[in-house]
Length: 133
Image (cartoon, rainbow, N blue to C red; front, side):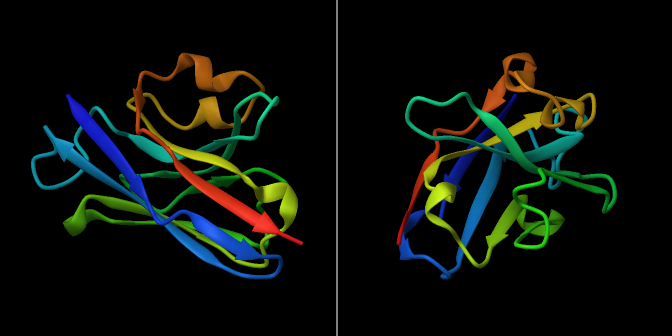
């Protein structure tokens, strides 16, 4: 089983940047194993449903972005460090949310439709991002 831990959240002003990290531990064998074919980020603001933000296929470089993230966020991974990053630039107040890292062995489809998060079983504890205007 793989465990995920996020870090890097914080409070910034609009237009600022943050980089979130998601470190995998446990049964990773030095890289994301077959339990983590896709690793990515969801976010949940108070009173709103959890939504997919960005994800990356850990066996390659294919990425998926929500429309709200395109052009501002970049997801990447460092296999040697078992870490997936989310670089967030030009942050807006509407980006304020708890950001969760998740992993899925069967691809990144869960990041592409509403409610997809319900299909995922491997989650981190979340890291809070607050963007002030």
